[in-house]
Length: 476
Image (cartoon, rainbow, N blue to C red; front, side, top):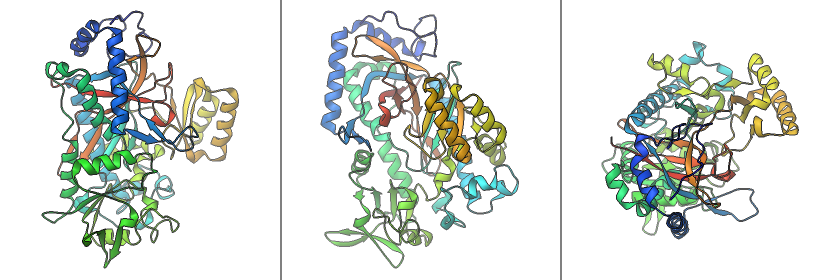
């Protein structure tokens, strides 16, 4: 396959240097690519698309009148990460996860970091994600964030930056696992030659950390889903199947004597650990939202009584608020007395008068985000927005400054991507590695690489038209 006219000068490209040379860790793949005719690549892409449909690898898009279920397009050109680069990512992610766990334990108990003024008290205590019923709680084994998906980008300086933390119900790991199986079929020989680290043991590792949360020798584990209309239902059912545990809805569970039971054809069976994929406030209508039809009445009291473990723990959402994100470097320094291994993207807090004025004066240069929004919603990309959109966001910021942050428009790295027009073109990507916290913290040696399929777009979210790539972490 010919690769002519490929542009890699304006951004950091994962495969090519700015001079057009192939980076060392891509050499094996590039040699294979050169020998593969475009027609064959197109056929491999078509086969990948068909396999995704056959597997049912879909997600739901809310507010979309073109049909509910979508395929997350998988581009067959992988993102490859050399081992040395991965080791730094791994160290930085472990450090961050450990510090955030200490932060959560502190703010729901002694609140030392607030009393010492390192993080503003009103930012935490006034957050809708700070759950007052969790005050005084210590979760089983002292772990709050059992499964974390941290989003990173690589800027044109070649350095990784943390974009945001996802500690509530991070999604996408099923696509990482299934994409690997699909791409293995497309390039079977390269996995052995290239020395790609496996990710297939993720479900076994996840089950192990869930079982670790219980003091029983053979705990009963389940995955709690909001149901088939949730955007990540495919993932919920996939993980339950891979772990060999029950997939349950709120209506499948009842609470008696502060214990949670699953209704089965053989009667009631106590459940000891739930991997919940349901938001905190919908979890228990007796404690949180009384109008929730998704949760289990009384489950929070059972949790407080120590009769069930929940992953992630209720209340973790306050730590991945986009305004709290700006304080994570200070949080790491406060609890660990270490400098962050991985840097944040510089962030302006609109709640601060000086930052707010800067954002209002430079809005056309910045990315503005709602602190509690996700999936690419509630966001303005200044350089690509209209004057009307700039004016609208200025008013939103002025009316509710606490609800917004802003960041410089970073130049996300690119990876060659197969295009319908023919050939390969660079498309912007981010990276979501997954971190499991059980007896120790482990970073899975792979990730969900999300790719902006539209030319020039920086928005990689699946709900906004993004796709994905398999991520190869090399042994050497």
